[in-house]
Length: 260
Image (cartoon, rainbow, N blue to C red; front, side):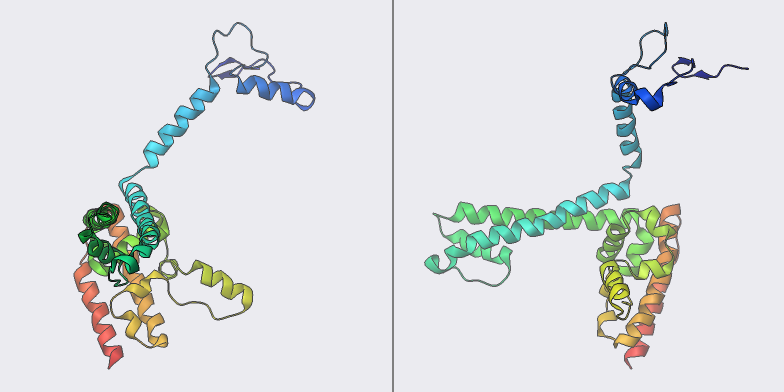
């Protein structure tokens, strides 16, 4: 019988007492020792090997679209940070007579004219400026990663679809029906559990002009948009070009006809 040669040497009835002595065997493996192997030289640290392998996998999977999703997550967190900072600055409004507009960034700018608190409000304006810079960077990058889809539905909605699908490859492999429901997963599961009507669309609702239609027409147009997104996303994944502008014009024409 031919002996099987493994990466760490010759197999010699490894783990023959696994059912009785498994704790010791697992401890040996964790510490980098291969049980019941003699004279095989220094055994590599399995823990370090697995950690390095994990890092390599992360580097391989951290594609440009995944990097952009992480950047968008930071940008979304800026909304929460700015709103929280705004709440803490609001008590200054009455004593100093700072006008409130409902816009945190405008409120921060209004407070810059008061020397004793200007440093606090300047930090708020800096955060607002940084968020705007991130918006510009994301808008530019999404046009590079998903040019066809960005032309079809706009950079902001294209970014929403990329985030919701958790990657360009996943989005490109989705059927149109799944693309149509991106962002409405929670409502869908609630409808299934409570016997209510299923939602007809998710973030696609943000497509310009769709919200102005009657509910029945929205679902039909949303399906048309999802069908075209399925085409443009596949083209983006493959690095090819499709006439997304004419696709958008076709959608806009259908929206105009429904409004009449």
